[in-house]
Length: 370
Image (cartoon, rainbow, N blue to C red; front, side, top):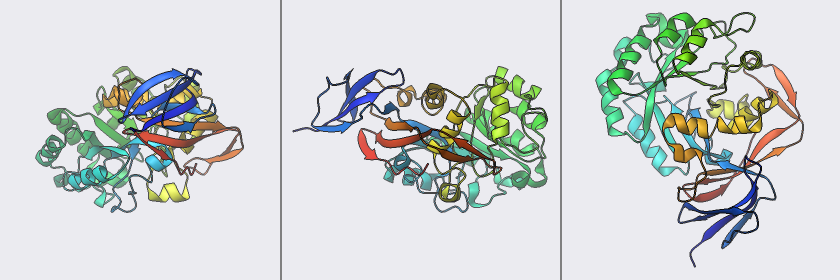
């Protein structure tokens, strides 16, 4: 008999209880709770189910240190159906990352580092000759279903004495390749006022809630004019928590001033997964629940918002006939200690905990570490 997986009695984000049947890797039926049928049943008992979580900023090339990890350790095992590597590899090694993705359970996509050497060094834009436009364009053409954009880390430790010139080169490369840019912001120079005006519609600013001096908010927490102008141009904001790039103070200022929540991502790699302050995408999501964002907005920031930016809407919805990408999770009412990248600690009263994930129609239980 053909297996038909039934996810029974799960709560969707519209609060409706439903059964979801999966057959041949696709969503076969969505029915009222108790009405579905299947040969294998996963009982939800009223816990939540959403489309599969998407982490738009991870580092999943295990050979690179410190910025590397195993794909499934930061993906399916943590309830994340799709991860997007944020520029671990440039043109020299992107093919190896593609092959790693083919062996993993988790869906893997990637931003291509504009430096051909990628994160084999952490100053990958300190020599302009490492920005090889032709090599990058050819790499993107080889893997058009894998490469979703270009990545440029524009902070002092990465660009060295080159200032904003690597970003100017990345901008030209973005236009030549017809791919958007994800730009990492951090310590200057170059200043944030030099960086942001070079970004265009659909580009992404990642680490937008960092607490460094060279950030997007003034001393009183008000958004800078360059940020407001960027939002009007259609630039997207990505959390990219990481070891050094998320501040509760900055996040509270952004919420207070109505800066919209676009995508929540972890910037996870081995060190901050095992030792914090990231641990998991669920842990980062829990911080936004603590900040007062409704659960629906938090989940949208790791599902439909990310899927829409990727132009892969099927990853962010639950629809009969689509390949099944789903995350099963609960919201537990229990004390949890949350730490940002500046060692500021907050005590929350609830946490998001993934229970299982369906990727390409295959169900797996989680190993949550939130």
